[in-house]
Length: 81
Image (cartoon, rainbow, N blue to C red):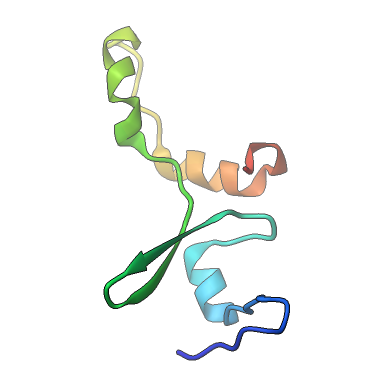
């Protein structure tokens, strides 16, 4: 897939990519340089970063549905970076 960068260094992503990744206006993207080029990924919640809190959570509480949490966060503008 080929996209062009404008004189203002802006890139327009094809609709099918935006839809497939669930991106919305205002979302943050993480850009990394790799040996093969540039890697662009949506900046998402990382559950493994919560591991230090594991002992502080009530073990009788049911696990959250992360898909619902991600969906709600994607729609809530207050939760964007």
